[in-house]
Length: 140
Image (cartoon, rainbow, N blue to C red):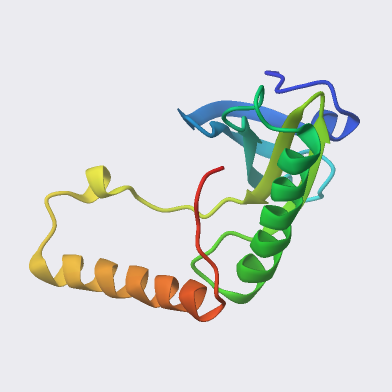
């Protein structure tokens, strides 16, 4: 089993594979071993940029605000993953979210004009929902 940290909550999740990485951190596909269904989840291990120049409390406040926003919008919109958990361990911040199975654009390309229209319409409805909530997404 791969490990993403030593926090007791991390013992709950069996990491299956890394599914992405970037400037904000690393994302893993995992199983929630404490749920009867062993549901698949996504764990985002966030690595805030410029941590040397920013007070830890400020980073923690941003993280808590982001978790609060994710809880609200994920619970109320079908195209946004639900937040299951969040915590900090050793200066790392973790979000545990619903895994939404699907295909990437690379998996389905080339796409038809009708498919492009359908995808863009769905994205725009989701962005409209976020805008109506007064939220702007950005990585810190």
